[in-house]
Amino acid sequence: MALHVTARFIARDDSRDALKNLLITLVEPIRNDPGCDSCFFIQNTAQPNEFVFIEVWKGKAELDRHLADEAVTRAIEDAEPLLDEAVELKIYEPLA
Image 1 (spheres, rainbow, N blue to C red):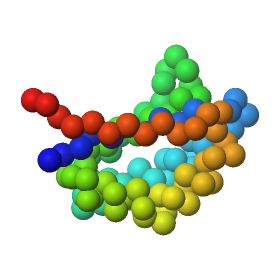
Image 2: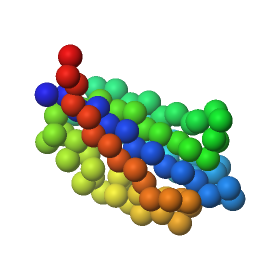
Image 3: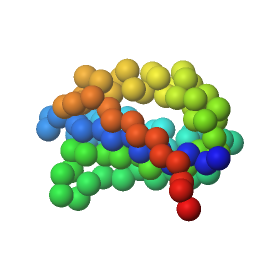
Image 4: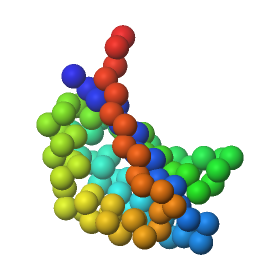
């Protein structure tokens, strides 16, 4: 069953551009992952320090593999000093 995932990142005021540039490098690799059905990277227009990935994964195994991928874990580690709060990851199952 497909899983819908959001990953929310809140930048510190002084690191917004650095965080955006770091995270945007992940978009194409995520989109090209065979387990990923879609990936959008968006920025909140009212709160420009907020960035969100919205992704759809084929299943739990594909998502788990993605989250354990070295490039993803490295990017999260690199992002940590740029963040104002912890990354918020939410996983949803479609109901209809």
